[in-house]
Length: 464
Image (tube, rainbow, N blue to C red; front, side):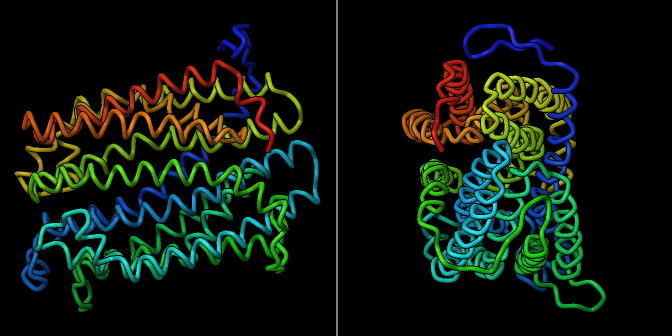
């Protein structure tokens, strides 16, 4: 493959670059798959709630899907705050590793975990106190509101170790270790699937807890993962050593926040808009929201190559810039886009060709299957644009260029997606297809802006 550099010159991507990108990205893709499976397994299990459990609990699979889906909206809001800590950690540690600066690496690891504790405690308090008001804010149907609030509150007790899990694995990726996070997420999924399977429908005489059982499985699983990562870093792993010293290092903390806060702002802007966006969907009824949630769940599988390659590219770009090799950083980014883009396009094709069959895997409700089938086809068609956004923005975040994605997100989501949704759904009455047309327009514009920014080369000049 031959890539075009940000300055217009042809930059060859040799076999060594291909292997390096692939070897780092493949475990990262696996990690993202396993991270997604924590929620995916829950959606599958609550979407196939047994008749006996439904009778005992007083609600069926469509209500369970709606409650878990809305509850996961809150979980995702707090998770993005944790991920913002990870973005700063990956960028700074990758630079320090590239520059072969061991003392700086040690300081960054320690401050990353301190910041993770702070964010985790804040997220826990938010989950316990704001679950009910959040469900009212997003317009949860009466039959799903209390169930979704309980789902959030149970999940909240796993937010502190989840913050340590996300911060610690981000630090490892910055050091070039993507395999350990993969193995940790294998254990997390095993625990989640096992506990959720036992408790959602009530196996072996255990009580059927439904949606609450799914939340308990996720909380216990993330808790175990966080403890494992903390133990590895305390022992010393991948060239990273965590020392138990809670004192803040002002300079290092400022650097982490300078890179991470714009990402947090970007995601909060997006999530705030998403709450309004979701309100349009919930107003369409329980079946429509369940169809939307199932489609999002299936589409999240196609995100995995983009997310994995973005994570690997962040580390590779940061290390190359730390070693003062900007052209190599470009090679890594373009090669990652080539490899990850092919994977996402292939998954998109499956979504276009077999939509009804995929939806049926996650819901046995005929109304949900009928509503979700056409919009899943639309989701499949937008995969090339998503690949560009995920991977090029990942490269820029690895360089510490996190303010520009914040501005572009503000434009595409608040100035384009929300007004389009209001017109297409509120005025024209297009329903769920209108919702997805606005969403896909947002994704496409985001990709075009990412291409323009990356080709400008300004991301190479960011001082972290």
